[in-house]
Amino acid sequence: MTIPVIAIDGPSASGKGTVAALAARALGFHYLDSGAIYRVTAHAAGNRGVDLADEAGLAELARGLELRFDGVEVYLDGQPVGDAIRTEEAGRAASRIAALPALRAALLELQRGFRKAPGLVTDGRDMGSVVFPDATVKVFLTASAEERAQRRYKQLIEKGFDANLAALVQDLRERDARDASRASAPLHQAADAHLLDTTALTIAQAVDRVLGWYRQA
Ligand code: DC
Image 1 (cartoon, rainbow, N blue to C red):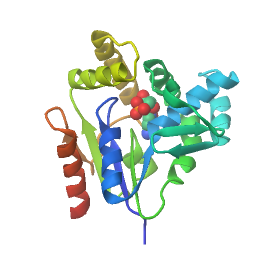
Image 2 (cartoon, helix red, strand yellow; image 1 turned 30 degrees about the vertical axis):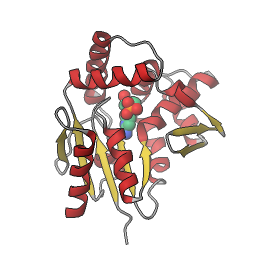
Image 3 (tube, rainbow, N blue to C red; image 1 turned 180 degrees about the vertical axis):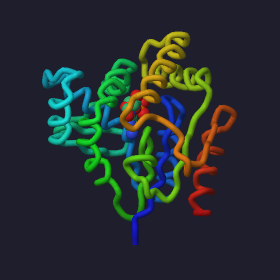
């Protein structure tokens, strides 16, 4: 029996993390936020003085990462990293290192290790296309840049961070362009992925669509 995987990919702030976590809870499956792995790797590089352009150094660091997830909290070397990896700056650093093929390769086995019974729901950019190409259900979840910026704005304000809506729209567009144009595992909708545009959907409606596709599969 292969362990089922629901892979939800899409651009920044599309809501894929929220939808994936809720779908995982509804099914009693494990949940993996793969973006957090890239964010934590960039964070660890900062702590250890590894340059964000040092591909071999980052790959080596990634292979030795001691990571643990507990709900939404991520532990690096046994210590909670908290919101330090949730800032826009941390997202930009993650997006930069995510363009490096040796680093992506180093993170493959780590990510695949999260596939455990009874199943996994995971979100990222290449979960359906590269990490779990045999996923039971693949979803490409997106929303307009303006809607995503609004959602990110709300999130940041709720966490007590400063935020500027126009700067967020600009930042999202730049990050999308970088994630979609890189040579290694670029962000794109896989041919066998269901498209889920959530611009006009509630979170509950988006989760229902994903669960419906899973039941059909
Ligand atoms: O989903 P997120 O915003 O937390 O991801 C942060 C960055 O990590 C994103 O800009 C691109 C990169 N990433 C990736 O390349 N592949 C993934 N599977 C997940 C994230």
